Structure formats: C-alpha cells, structure tokens
Length: 175
Image 1 (cartoon, rainbow, N blue to C red):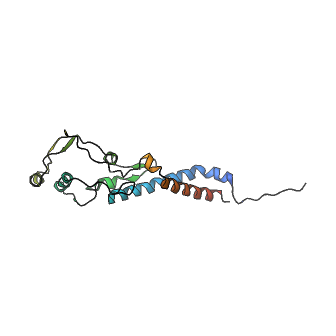
Image 2 (image 1 turned 120 degrees about the vertical axis):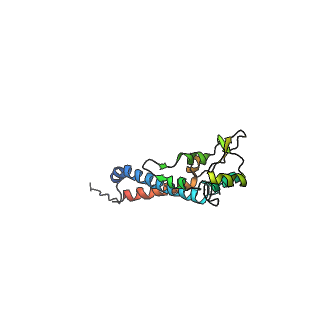
C-alpha cells in the first residue's frame, strides 16, 4: 500500500502554544482602544452611543466661573482632571471614582444655594460656594462615557473583536 503524505499550511499545535499570549494581546489592545475612546468621549462631550451629553445647568456654569474653569467646555471636562485620570492598565481601565458616578447619574446630597450672578461675584473673591442639603432631590443626569455590559456587547463591538480574533488566529496558524 502506498504511503500518503499530507502537507498543511497551518499548525494547530502552534496555535495552542500561542493562544494564551494571543488572548492577552487582544485583551490589552481592547483595553487601550477603549481608554482612548473614553478620553475622546469626555473631551468631546459624547456618550457611548455617540449622542451629545446633556448640557450643564446654569448653576454648574456659575460654579465653574467661581472656580475659574471654562464654562464652554463639555460636561465632565471643567478642570481636565477626569480626562487625565483615564488610563489603560493591565487589568482594565483606571478612572477617578467620580467618573463612574457621573457616568451612571446620581442625586447629590448637597447642591449650590442661591447661585445668582450677584452671589457669584461675592463668592468669587472668597472662593466659597454656599451649599445646602438637596431636599428637592434634584438629580444630576447620567452622562454615560463608560461602557456598561450591554453597550460594550453591542453588535458593532462584537464584530470588531471577532475580526481581530480571527486575524490573530490566522496569523498563529500559519507555518
């Protein structure tokens, strides 16, 4: 009986050896891409869906002016501290704690009290903003710049991840 020789242009053992590193590389690439996208969203005032964030209230504008922050910057970007805090790490994305609170929306315990132009001028010299308890339960709207599980698992994101995975698997299979 004649011997049959089979030649392949791929190697499953090579893929098995490289799979752990391949998975780590894709994860790190996704983390870096998402950190970059989060910074872009905060800088431009857009949400994870691409829509514009809800504009800031007049009280926030006056508070910003007292603190010498620009009133023309998008929400979440008055001082730039949140934007600078977003960075990719080995395990995920690091961001200041108030960023995640702002992303989901919240009800503050205290709110600025009687912020009018006159009060702002008087406070500007002292750099004090009068705050009172939030008895009216005024809410700060959600400004979702951080993906939730539902938004991250959108069809578009899954397709992007799948394309990267298939490309890396094909590279690892080649002899």
